[in-house]
Length: 242
Ligand SMILES: [Zn+2]
Ligand SMILES: [Zn+2]
Image 1 (spheres, protein in one colour):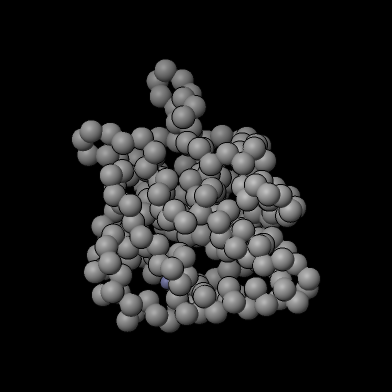
Image 2 (cartoon, rainbow, N blue to C red):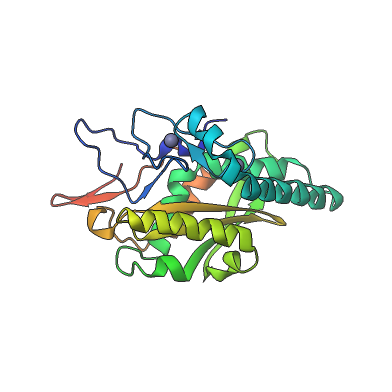
């Protein structure tokens, strides 16, 4: 599976690629993913990423607890899903969905939380995206967006202290490097859910415009099974799609 990190830099530039509104950081050394590099995703939790096998190895001591906690939850939700007569495909499917649509989901979170205008929302709210499932031979078309809503971020951080701690750790790191914090996007389908943290750069460095139709855009790309979403930016010449 391609790492969720793969799509974060869609348009390579020649000099000094700017950090976009969401960016990927090596959890060990703090390196930022660049267009010509691909970070590796931890296979246990599928959340944390590293620039190299060495960094992944060096980080294991401090990462072990949250990683095993997350993979334990995945195993539990798989059990619940199976005992409720659903297919195990949903568990795998939600992770695949999150990974395939990482750029779109991060963008939707940024727009929904109105981070350009109200950066402090990053600590108050999370975007909850509820999916419905249908069986289809095309794995990208098994889900559609049933609803989207803002929920207090404590929905995640209070119900799961370890995840809360990990989000705060990411947030501290992001703010130390000038960002505004960690946007939290929750993807949920029945009893299966996945939390996606996205570190958000300072709004002054972000060129993406505030758009009200993020919900429609999200539904459109998901329904069409399209994973080629590129955030929409505005310039003096107007709004640029892709
Ligand atoms: Zn590293
Ligand atoms: Zn892990």
